[in-house]
Image (cartoon, rainbow, N blue to C red; front, side, top):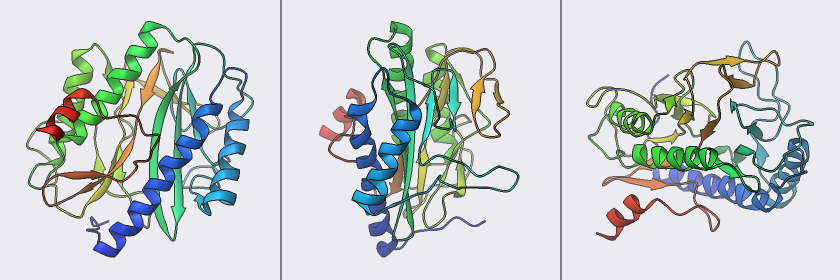
Length: 271
């Protein structure tokens, strides 16, 4: 599959889809509380996406070759679940951390993003993992500009995570996105600088590092989707969809409720 360089018209549609995906996370944020089930979070998001936004939940019924059809309109990955958690009867409790991953389709284009949420008063270790993972995502985003290489993104993420004693999940990665949910290129969250595809203006892809507090090994549960850490350690993930511009990058999955960029990014933007 060749990398799709988006036209100005396609980019504008991706801006709309990305903003709507982020606004769906804004909507669900107040509902992420102890006592709420992941199934109920899924129902709330589904109703908001379909009936308020007029978008299509991309994950509902999604079925790549070799997988069962996904049954949720969102992914809900709690504590040691790395990714692709299926909404169900799991009830959130004080101290949990949860990644909510939402992809919407609007006018044929996908907006894809995820955030970590902390339920009540989580441990210092859980909060630190979420914060460092957020910084890892932004470390990768900061490498996005024409002429750099995809390996620069992965190297920045891996270096920051390992500096804090964490490990990088290697079985899953970021990806190009547009009219298809998953396009080329693959965006690895580890790697060597100066390697990989050259980054070009007009590319659109996700950066979505999955960082484990313990070892990097993961396993798939019998449902065919849910991925967990083998050692049962906590895992965190953040995701943005990024457009490569002529001078750097533009975050497409941005909305009023988006968490602010970390200080090291804000200071660069102000310079």
